[in-house]
Image (tube, rainbow, N blue to C red; front, top):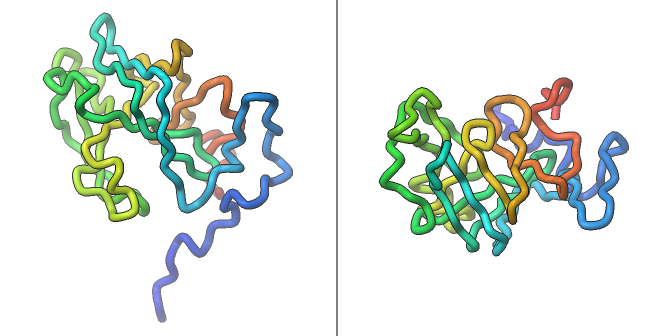
Length: 178
């Protein structure tokens, strides 16, 4: 018996918005219009990340990863991150697209645990995110052009929810089968 690729089981791939999806208004995007496999889009808006009074990030050259059913994940170049404030912390995970992730914590707030992650050796099609980090908006204050980002539901996910994004999103109650 051959092992089936989990990607073959997906029902939603961004080609057709399902009936339960919210309709985007002017200036909004539906997560159901994002593709699967995910795509990477350059974003030149101002991104800031703070931990308390400390600014960890100020960038205008980030990458958004857009994937069906998830709010965008914003990846920030390490050159725009105060890397001196971060340290590798325990934990690893694996993304079928991007590869093996490592986690980082803030040295001055270890009680927060992992606040960011990165892919030190991303899979080929995601080579662009090498030396980029993404942050959990549930753990640190993230903003896009001054708008405070809300965290994606579900605890594990790191999507950045703003007024421009409509769902429903993976991670909310009842979405386990997506």
